[in-house]
Amino acid sequence: MKKLNCWEYKKCCQNSGNLNTGSVCPVKEEFIADGLNGGINGGRICWTIMENHCKQKAKKDCFQCEFHYRVMNEEGLLNNCNSIGIYLSRLNNRYSPAIDRIA
Image (cartoon, rainbow, N blue to C red; front, side):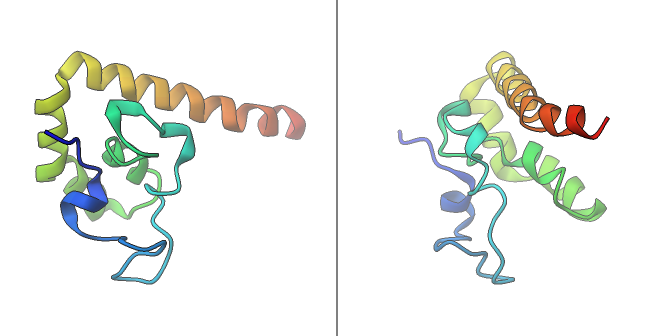
């Protein structure tokens, strides 16, 4: 069975933008998450990425999303936690040099 990305599963962001708002989907553009949980960019770790981009209600919705549970079931808890750790490490590395320059 093909591993779906969140925009394929939820049928949103089919082009470069979000069909609901016209803005670019941060999950689709999150290149440092590419390959995690077998997804394209942030497509299979979307709930972690959206935590940084959404208002409080949306964050809650992401963690209770049917797609989130699907990925957890397909990947298993340990692999999924490992992918989140890799993403957060890459994210930290992305911003660390900028923080060092400010200090």
